[in-house]
Image (cartoon, rainbow, N blue to C red; front, side, top):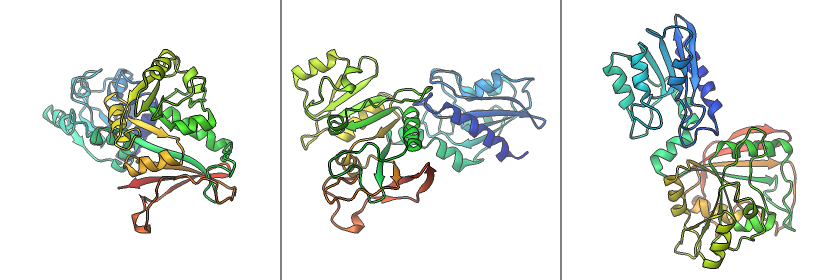
Length: 362
């Protein structure tokens, strides 16, 4: 078997931690001795054993002299768990094959250096592109000090996100809606503007049987969210932040009593400072945000340079109507060469819909 074979096994294990380890990275590890797997593991829950220690803990025989395949450079610092490099050295692993380097300043080459100083042979960059893509959100979070933002919307084949009367349920099919809930379970937070709350009264939860609810973030400049909305009435049970421009004392007191957290983020234009909001979310360990807002919030996020990926659910329907809304509002660009640029799409069929995924290029 090749290095790539065993690394692919480790990558498949790492994906099992999706939605459970944020803001930590997804990591898988496989230990091979004499061509046989003797241990494997993955980082399964934030604060729990790292993949390397999990794999060592379940070894079926002495790992001395074995090769460990790990998707991300092993850590060399004390956090919620002790350094994985210590465990690798203590167990006599002779070779460590790594998928991707770790950009975290607490690691950033230090893990490789510690292993080599201990006499371990280190091979780097095996399936590096795949390993890096697996942790794109973590890398962005570490390097840019803001959450990785995925902007999602469903639209018809003529580019409408609602009919001329404002009705939007349902544009996409059941398979697409299930995928949305999988994304909600994978990311740390979900964000909408107050206009979406007023129009749709959403719950913004994950409805998968084994899913977890993301933190809910509502951009509401003047705290106009209704106290009887589903968001507010469930805030005691589901963490909810309402980001505002100005915090009216009476409304603040009322919403806080219902379980909401009010976060003033005053911008220069009388609206929520989205960059400031993202920086605050980063400091609180929110590594990723799913934006499910309307056209106005979508444009504001793009204009601020805060969106990393688009998820567009394209339905085989036509709404028509000159006044029916499209997915991106705001002022818009004046010339074609001022457009927001997107990378090459990944296209996934979901029932009769198509999921188009793009990286946003800045």
